[in-house]
Image 1: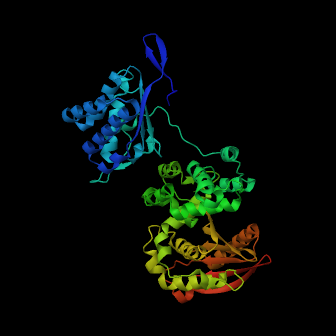
Image 2: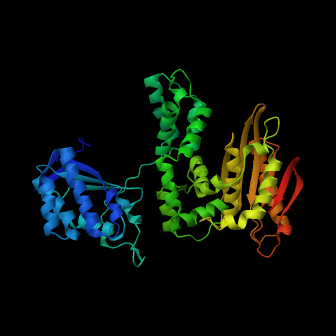
Length: 478
């Protein structure tokens, strides 16, 4: 940042100067919520501390006290920044990180004070203010604690000159980044490992770096730099991050509970037909990095596809009375028929009480089954997920290593939605067959969840064997 040059114009000429800058995290003011006084004064304290720590300028500590005593919070931050800028021999730059963590009136007050100082730049206000967050300022939406009314637009939000978005890494950039480790340490990433990192993250910056750090430093045996890092190492690193619920992944839980996020995610998780959802909601979830819009609306990457249903069913998984050993055959293979039969029985007995606990009720049956499978597969395999938006289906691939090789099982989940059973069955068999063909397995299962409240469980619960295009497919009604 010290190399940034800002043009400070005076009369008819401009002088390029290196600005004085401070950066600070305003997340501490989030706890103030609608208390503007507490929120603004918290940010002022952070500004003064940043000036002391980064510029060795302790004057703002004293100025802050006098301003807090003499000015209302709706004007106090602007006054502090004004006095800082006037005292500086150079233009000033202010970076506010986590700005979108602020809530309601506190955020509005901060934005309005920043906007009010715009015309006084650069002599009496920072030349540049950078607002850093996970969303664009145009998308800030607040709810007051009392009235819960949505506040949007207005002059407080009309402060943006330009939005810059940190995009995802390209596949080539991931390769170059990982090669830096190889050049410095001599440890090799195999091409399959780098390809796997791309497949899992699609370039999401935090995930790309977290995988690399996990596989090179946190997995103890890999600290031996003579060990070549493979696809299996990357997959183990991915699993470690998920099980540890690293901060970035853990924060997803809070986002998933937001109504705007839930509306979009329910649609994707169930594979339902796209509805007329508000464009702002779709853009909001896109800005959060949870989904991408091309080639179609979908969860952004393979890790998120896995962590989102796991997060939504974490408590369910932990409280299920199930053991992996119950479903393992003497040769080490997974008895998928026994496993799905057990789930069928479990679903009949417990689904009503379990589904009531889910925030995502539309996707409840699919999530409950994934929780059941995850509970068993955590004992030695992995579960891959794919969601077919508009196809009313969820594709699951169980990968189970055993002494004789690797067992793959395709499980297709569908909810009829008042369609005739034969039509749903025909579509489901073709889709299951296609997924079996792609996955290279002969073990395929089609699960149909019947949500008709008028039907008895005796009519909903059934099992039969179907043959489609030369493959045997087990069909389970629930």
